[in-house]
Length: 196
Figure 1 (cartoon, rainbow, N blue to C red):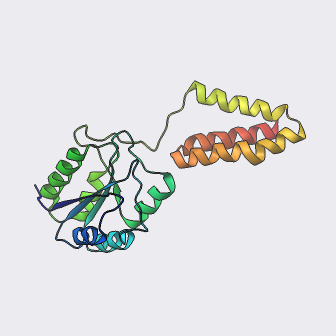
Figure 2: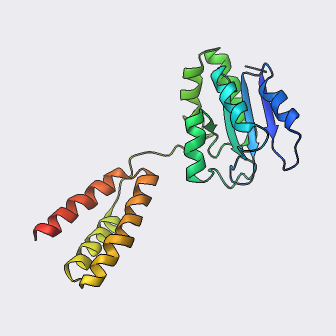
Figure 3: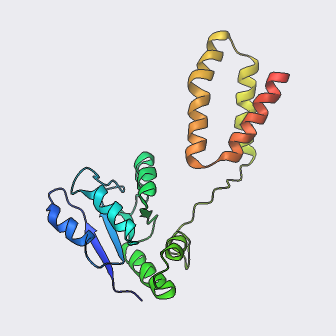
């Protein structure tokens, strides 16, 4: 079990030197308790620079919401944080996050790659894993079939409206949620409707 885990609970008027001190400490992992639903003010406290430097030193940085009902920050910032090397805590509680990091440091010592990989997996029910593969059933297939019917009986105006607004929004949502199999099914169905 590791005792080298630091916690930064962000507040709006926090002194920048306090945040920087934590990021330049000897901690092996830093848990950032971010605002509301996981938002990090990267433009304040030199936070982005501190995160980059810590990750470069093989420090594990975890972003955790202070609101336990909100497990994810907005999609755009979430992608940016992932690119920086920040791990999300998902729906784990604060103490589950600390216990899991301690356990993984005890198990893998300094193998940061193994710790990062295993942190994202449910070990004992502490984390709800989100599966990439979504199995869709009758309702989703019916929705796609209904969209296909709309395309068959369309006026030129409705056709343009669907092409420009409705379909791109549905596709973007499916991509963001990782439901690529539904997107593939929609594409196949769309090709079928064009040949009919």
